[in-house]
Amino acid sequence: MAESPHNPPEPVTMPDPLMTEPELVSPDVAIMTKPPAGRRAAATFIFFTVTLDMLALGMIAPVFPRLIEGFLNGDTSRAAEMLGLFGTVFAAMQFFCSPIVGSLSDRYGRRPLVLLSNFGLGLDYVLMAWAPTLNWLFLGRIISGLTSSSIPTAMAYMADVTPRERRAAAFGMLNAAFGAGFVLGPAVGGILGNINPRLPFWVAACLSLINGFYGFFVLPESLSKENRSPFSWARANPVGSLSLIRRGNMIAIAAVLLLGYIAQQVLMNVYVIYADYRYHWTDRTVGLSLAVVGICTIIYGAFLVKPVVAKLGERGAITIGLIGGAIGYSMIGSSKTGLFLWFGIPLLNMMTFAWPAAQSLMSRKASPSEQGQLQGAINSLRGIAGLIGPGIFTYIFSRSIGVGLHIPGAPFYTAAAMLLISLALAQRAAASQPRAAA
Image (spheres, rainbow, N blue to C red):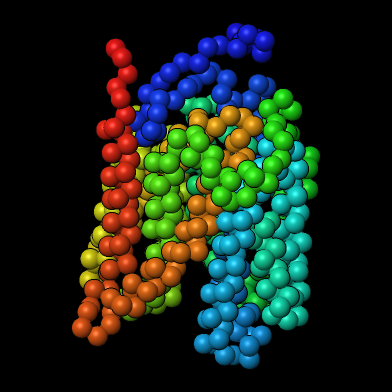
């Protein structure tokens, strides 16, 4: 029977080894008072929204360098510099805008922010498809960084409509959506780009706009009015949003996520050039190996996160996820012929267990009116990783194959070390947590 809002239950103190203080858990914390009607359709829409967002980003990846190079009259060196600038600006927009969008969703509800993002992203792809100059394309990339910042709102929506004990599985499904976009996007974009380098932008625009119109009819609001909070710039700026993590005693898990997100940048920024340098793989082989990574992400996120968390708990899932990821990165770095790399991919993808479990633990510390701010803060951690990770790993790789030193796997060993540091932080926090009284 539901508790009366006028007579809320007393909080129950429960130990949480990954938090610095005991967690106050109330049965109605971070759970909607009344789940929206059509919750299954709404959750499905959110899943497809994230999938289409990632698909669209993946679709433009193969053609983006060529489009930039075309504006620069074939100057590959300058095009590479501009590509790096575009990536940095996109990550910076994610860092600054994610907490703002998340806080706005805490104030006005999830539905309007998710729909505005779909329509905004669709119109932005139209802008980039039409862009007559490099400056217009650059403007489009800035806007896409803003409109893609709806991912925290989608995460907050899932936290709203999902019971606490099933949140890790829900976040795992969203990770599967990331994997689906990672696999399908570049493949579809490459096919369309061979027809016309601007065609992937037009298709991405259509997908986003169609999804927005579909959501207009099927997506109910998930955040009740009594659980909304006033918008505040003090909370919405990146530093202010991260203060929620400090106030909520979530620093240990936030550090795990940040180091993990930075480690993932080695795949995005070094993997292709590493495989070409060390194994002389063709584009087809590199693409196939990345597709296997994405397929494993889908399988793990959609089918394995739920039973693993049910069996081991969220903290156990974090532990095995970090250990598996560290072993996987080490196998990639130590593989001399590429064969060892293939066996390392399934272990590497065990990280898929860690991130949803960590997000689930953090969501328990935030009230219903703070889920958007929390997910915005988490996405800001991704933005920080996107700002500093590429420079770290490309520098390490360039130095590792230089004169007098030849350790081409050094970037992957570094990523493995980051995950082991994350594991040590998590275990130390668990060990320092006082045991609950019997």
